[in-house]
Length: 113
Length: 116
Image (cartoon, rainbow over all chains, first blue to last red; front, side):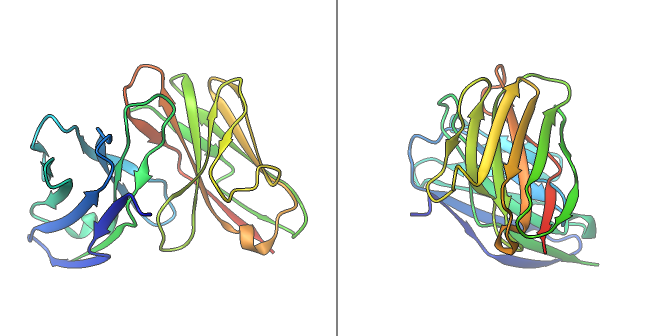
């Protein structure tokens, strides 16, 4: 049973456009929702994360929107740039000690110049 | 953010040999380390969770005798792939959590294993 569902699988956006990636989760005990960016052959890097006590968090061009009642959260990349072309993973975890992140399947973003 | 290193970055070995991958937290003490495996164009799959000084907890379907994990210190965890076979070829990534940061996990750069 997949605990974190991510869509779309791939996304093509023009330079300057808005990239939107969505995730839905099932476990209401999750209380930490990060997004990771991964370039080919590299480990994932934390982009931005949110906790359920806020509905939105913004860091530069990256914004997370969180809907607790719908159990959904999304990543918005404003003014998308070719350098943003990468694979993006949403993830979730509980606050219990020793628990690991549960990852979505990933979205491959291509930003055309 | 905290830095996690992995060594080697890539390794090619013959079928039947064993390979050791090191994961180090460079500027913090990692109470918990995680090992993930990632196949091409797929997500990260958790293999095991290790806490310093105790036995690792393996995910369902991961052979503990094949993937030996040692977390001997607060800054070092090792993954040994024993009797490697071509189907073990993958990208192995470790991550670490500190004892103070509530949830944040810091990932290593990954190790590309190719078994011939």
